[in-house]
Picture 1 (cartoon, rainbow, N blue to C red):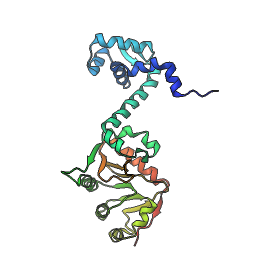
Picture 2 (picture 1 turned 30 degrees about the vertical axis):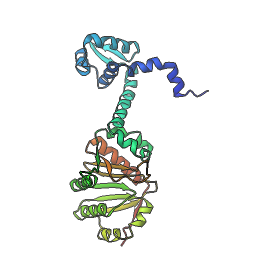
Picture 3 (picture 1 turned 90 degrees about the horizontal axis):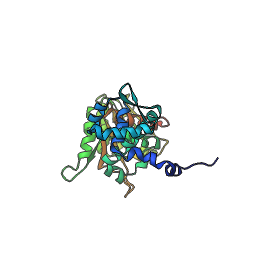
Picture 4 (picture 1 turned 120 degrees about the horizontal axis):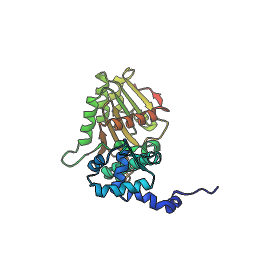
Length: 275
């Protein structure tokens, strides 16, 4: 059987496909009904439109068998319930790409493993933190604040600086558990000064564990019980960008970050801290 490409499918059914995204009202109605049936009055409130504008659009959705009338309300049909989550995901994905457009354009987003890149809509509620002329330590200050509020810390990184190492040491010595996954190359560098002296007090400390990743790492990730911080490599230089992070407290973003941490930990090997 000949495989049919998405482009061929689009060419054949483009009128039906465009029917949803061409109309603001039809897209809004589909998303609104994704959470359950609603009366016309509620759909008017959600869309900010009159019945005269809304009803013809609903009729078109009924003609496509995506929406039906149920006991005076409007609801998605079984076909509509199949289509609506895809619309919602496309809208959310475009939202996170546009909201943080500069971040995604400037950085190597492929440094994020594909399965997590396919879920970046969970990062919609994060905020961009950038070093600027008026605040050249904005990213470091944000990182420091995150660690000092954390009950526990999980990190993934291919880079280290004395400032970051010092913050990790302070966190662990205060009794809060921390786990750090690093590349093999970075692990070797941690045996040199100044890191050797800074990490020495953590050797054998029950609150601190280090691992080396079996997978390449092209990002910097810090996850705590209430925060996510994500940094990437720049496209123009190929070097890690320590001047820009995405930071968030949203539960979906934190959960995404923790799953990413566990992804790297799954095949990582325990590392003895240099003494």
